[in-house]
Image 1: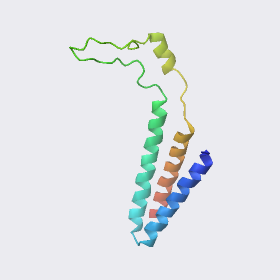
Image 2 (image 1 turned 120 degrees about the vertical axis):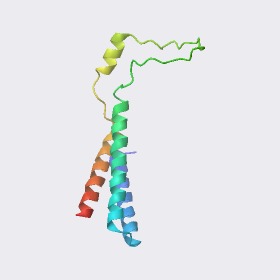
Image 3 (image 1 turned 180 degrees about the horizontal axis):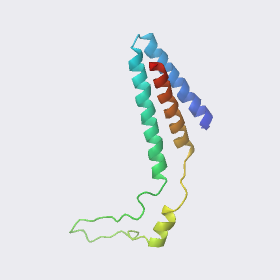
Image 4 (image 1 turned 90 degrees about the vertical axis):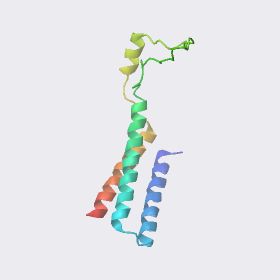
Amino acid sequence: MNKRFLSLIIYAVSIIVGLIIYIFNIQIIIMSNVFFILGLLLVVIGSIMIITKGHLFTGWRIFHRKGDNDRFENEKIPAKEIGRKKNESIVINDFAKLCLTVGIIWILIAILITL
């Protein structure tokens, strides 16, 4: 699915949600709170997606129970490989960009509604 098409769908859904809230005479503050919380949720999802591509947990050891004698074959990772992975550039995929931009726009809309 095209990124622009997906962002247009998200914007259309947000406008429809706003119109439904307005039609049912729900207070504007509640509508602003809904947009703000959804925007924060999208920003958190986008930032989690960026962090997962950053090899944050590379090099952590897998802990076993005392009685467990089985070891995983790839448990020990060489230090040079850990350094190489952690020094790679940050990858921001299209879906993370979309989540961040839509989340920030929804937060700005929520702030503008309450002014």
